[in-house]
Amino acid sequence: MLLTACEQQTRRLTSSLEPDSADLHITEAPWESQAQMTRRMNHVTTYLKNATGLKVRYVPAINYAHSYALVERGEADLILVGIYGGYRLLKALPNAVPLVVQKPSYRLVMLGHRRWLEELETDEEPGLASVTGSRVGFGSRFSGSAFLQPLLAMQREGVKSADIDECLHEPVQRHLPAQVANGMVDFVFIPSHTDKNDQFIPEPLRDELAIVWTGPLDRNDYLIGVNKPMNKKQQSNLQKVQQAFLELDRTADDGRAVLDAYMLPGFELPTSQFPEATNQRIETLLSRSGGLPTCEAS
Image: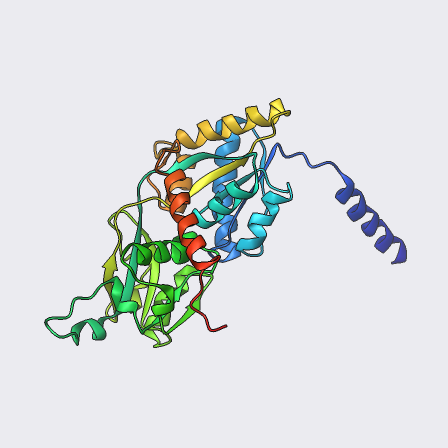
């Protein structure tokens, strides 16, 4: 038994010392359960292998901050991020570059209880300003789609995070609608895609919840790669990945699996408006509040 245990330990140690055979490592902020993240990343890495011949290994992250740290420490070469992670990494890493961005298909949706909507006076207009004095649920404090996007939308309409009475942060975005249904909060912000504004409302809750406000069609997600100027192979690999994402479509099974997993129509090259202009708006928001705002009690 002792011999067997020693042999097993030796195999584990030998395995941990073997060189990593991956060409690139990719990570993503865990906005869903790890099981769902792993399934989605399996689609991504399978597609990239078939499209580029590269072996891309998924590196799971514990939370949003950890996913950014993996890139900052050089443990991941690629990361799929929202606007907060992208802003942070492009600011921190001179060699980080946006490779592709989602085609316009993101829309911010604010949900409330249907009973609240039905009880409004005829002269009351539901909207983003309804969060004033209310309890509001967001995604993770480091989420672009479900926290920073709502803050930017509020900024455009002159509503401050301090105007909210109470808030909570729910890292798993699919759990947010239930927070309204069970009375924990009055409103929540969830991301949606194109015309599917109610896609994250669970079927059992559809009679209880209502869409209070929707934002304009926009972008939120993009792929960042860490370029190494002296490493020609790394540059070539990133270019292959970029091209593979640009060619994603639903004509092939593996491409369709990736796009369906993200609920996106596809990716395209970065533009002057995204992420550059979006990052400038984020910079203005953060400079006014002295950092990432919060509505939680200090």
